[in-house]
Image 1 (cartoon, rainbow, N blue to C red):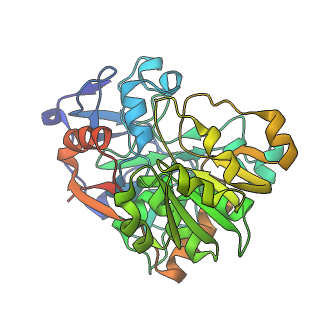
Image 2: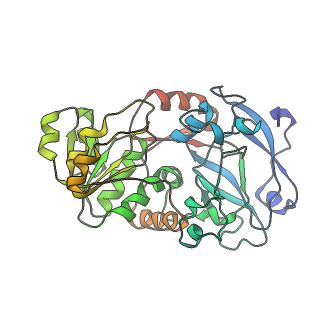
Image 3: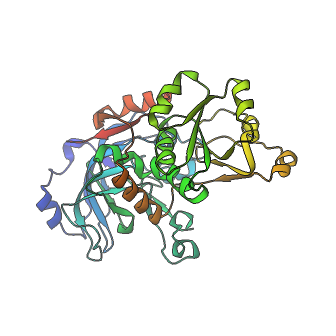
Length: 369
C-alpha cells in the first residue's frame, strides 16, 4: 500500500496538477502508521482517481485532533474505523486547509486556485431523511476523511470524492486558526447553536482543545459562560477566552454556589478515565441539559433525581454542512479562530506525544511548505 518517498513521482505545479487527468490516481507523500501505536513514517501511497464530484487540495495546514490519536492507537471505540481494520496503514488528518488543485466536472462551488477546507466528514448519500434535513453526519452512508483506509491530510495532497464536503474559506478567516474549526470547532458549534439560545447560562466543562473553542463561540453567541475546570490555575486563561465566570470543580463549595443556575453544560472532556459526572447534574436548572461532545467512558446517572428537575442528557457530533457553513461565516464576521501552535508536518510524532501527555487550551496545526 505504500512505497518509499524516493519512489514518489515528482511534485506538480498548480497548473500541472489541474491538468492531470481526473481518471488518474495520484501518489501522495504522507505520514502513516503501519500498525496500531506505531510511530508515523513518511511514505508514499496511491489515492484513487477523482470522480465527477471529487476535489483535490494541496495541503497547507492540518489541525491535530484527539481523534487522530485514537485512530493511530486503535482505541477508544475507533478500532473498527481505522485503516488497520481493512488491512491498510492509518493516515490521519481531517482538519485541512489548502489550495484547490483539481475538481471534477460537476463541482462548481470551489475552483482551482482557491482556498478551501475539509473536515471530519467527506461523504454522504444526500438522499436519506437525515441528509435532506441537513444532518448529513447522521447519514447511514456517512464517510470520514481519514477512516476505513482513506488517506487523510497528513500528506502533501488530499482527495475526496464528494466535493460537497469541501468548503470555501471566507477571506477574513486565518488559515492556521481556522483549520481546527473544521472538526473540533464544528463539534462544539453545533450543540451551542442547536441546543442553546441567547442569554442562556452555559457551562463549559473542560478547557482543552475543544473547551477553549467552545468558550469563544458561546461568549460570541451571547451566552453567559461559566468555565468549569479541575484546575484553579486556569481561571485567568478562561476569562481571557471570553468566560464570564470560572469555577474550580475540585472545590465543592464553588459547586454548591453554582447549583441550579445553568441552562446548559457542554462536556468537552476527552478521556479514557472514568469520570464521576454526578456532581455536575445538580448545577442544572429545571429542564437544563448536559451535552457530551468529548469521548468519555460510559456514564451513570441518577434518573430518579433527574426526573424531579426534568433534566436532559444529550450528545452531539460534528454537524452537517449547514453548521459548517454557518460557523465559518460567523467566524469571519466575529474574527474568531482557534488558539494554535504551529509545527512543521515532519514533527508530527513529537506533536502526537505532546498531545497525549499535555492538556492545554491550544490546538496543534501542522504546516507544509
